[in-house]
Image (cartoon, rainbow, N blue to C red; front, side):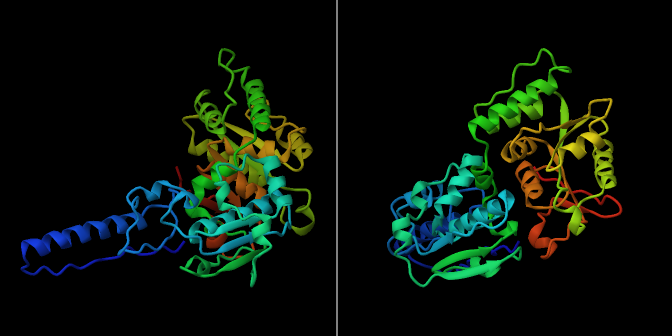
Length: 376
């Protein structure tokens, strides 16, 4: 992902009076504060802005701690629109995340069609999104000269340049993580499980872990962060989430072979040979999973229940330490939100450049398992 190089200021030192030195020191301190502010990393809520040095904001030293809509130093300059609803859940997550990422980068208002927002809210908490960031239906209907920009999964780097657009509507699929990766932690917070999902997932984990940890306290389900922390630490187990997409991929040659899954599982057993490794499996074909992987006599593979929703499966997978995925956007999101080590089958041929679709910690597995890169 391209990075903007930091500014370099060369100061020529000349003999000057004490009064002039004091004036320059004051101005220099103001400039230093502004430069430091503009270099804040992507994990904060800071967005690109233009500050008039001649009339500095009163709270400029604290503005990086505020959302764009709360910050009097910010001015909304543009609008990002997401109305199309092609594909399934993983595709819509990509579209929303890309629209959100562009809006955050350029300090735009964000319009999401109500049916899409309703569907996403039925699966995720969709918080903490500043309500003032959204563009209302009334204000959206007042917009003119809307540019429609379509892509599949090619990174549209030119849209991250200052003042790149005024009103833009996203069309297509936008399956490049580079459009929103600068706000990765915010995206993870937005796509957290609803309370009912957390309850079902926690109950299931309590059930499968009771045989080898009968004295363990029930897992918390108040927040996904607390559930994730407890699940990862309570049982002295390294959990690897596996997502297998089969039903619609078999006819087009994208379905992963069983051999790939077994080799990937062996990789994690060997990599973490000094730890207890267990696998949590989800799929659009759970019958296949039970027939092939469910007969493990050592109970090291746990297949998520048939009555789990797609949101239940996804949230459960994101709680794992590491991931094995096949093809499709759903598997991408299970691994991206989980973090850790990720193995991805090369059989899924993304139609864009690998660098645009696969984050650097995704290892695309060919005939042999390549060296893995780890992300915290």
